[in-house]
Length: 505
Ligand SMILES: [Zn+2]
Image (cartoon, rainbow, N blue to C red):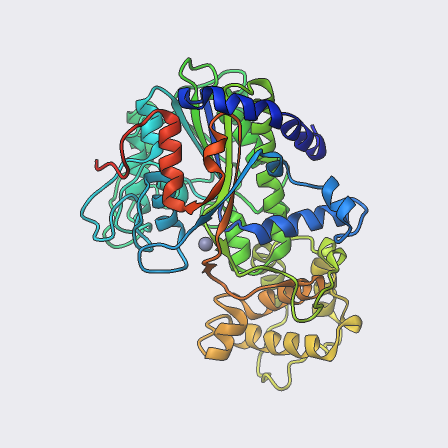
């Protein structure tokens, strides 16, 4: 089913859902989906729809064309807005944000499922779902022990205690875990972490681990009750690849979501399924709009799977879509184009910053040793074989002769620093220009994004409020302006919990 039709399916059901919400909200829906775009706020959503409008043959600024290219998530009947600050920062991280919307309490940056002092541990709404008779599935495009999924079961003073996070999962009894792999499955990730063999712990608790496409997809026909699904190719930090880099033979986020549904839907009590699009955030950290947009589309395709399910069981299915914070300070509009936009330039980028930085650019460096040259003598402009210029054009659509003097100057500076220094970026100027990234790689995406009319202010998260979209019975609770801790409280109420949050373990 295509994206546009999916939007129609959800939008057409709005009137029915409104009546249904009033009649049955207190009973609680049998099936609850919580979709979390990590780093996704209004800018990421709008940029993706503008991109869709452009690639589907229209203009990114034509209101009629934009309306035809709405994301599936925008078919939701209720829209709200959440504040995301944590205990100590206007700009939350994914650990404190996850603790807020999973457990219903503020904590400090880096802490999962505990209070700021790390003296009390809390249950999450996934525990509540399990308590009230639902099966629990958690899907993420990043590693399974990453902060967002971990917030649904783990209590750790540091999100980097990834071995401990994975170990705590093995004791949950949750039914489905799928996406990336484990970042530290056989030993401590960092000081203070545990040292369990996660594979042994999973096996001892009755979990089956699947890691090839055939076995994972077969779950749709032959469901398992306790299963962990790991995508065949893990690109970076045990995460699924960026959508733009995904080779055939992998499992998409949408496919993983479908498999989770098929494993859990036969249960009489229904399910609670969390799906995280985790690399929207990673792409935005690196200020790579194209990689972010492609991961947004993959995330929205997973929402479309839930929308299809909603269309089958509209009286029993609630779909919630939101983000945990904005990342990168992404802006629709920038100083270079003012009121203009030119998203056509985005269509020429063929891979993510990550892929280019791990493949083409290291290969170029190996092929072009700096030897005794100085920064003053190394110039892209003067390169005899034009290898660098060709790479910029092939991978990012940047044609050297079309670039202005300022673009060329920035590329020349980044080229020198990348080849001679790598990416320590210790000088203040370099840390602002390049963040923690390779100067060459991030300058290339900066110029592509600038030409499109997309701005960036940060390599970290920002404190912008984040939209919340909901559809189905109980969705009415998500209208309005509220805090991220209220999301856990609303979900807990929908699941049947009548007390207050957080709940200490
Ligand atoms: Zn982040």
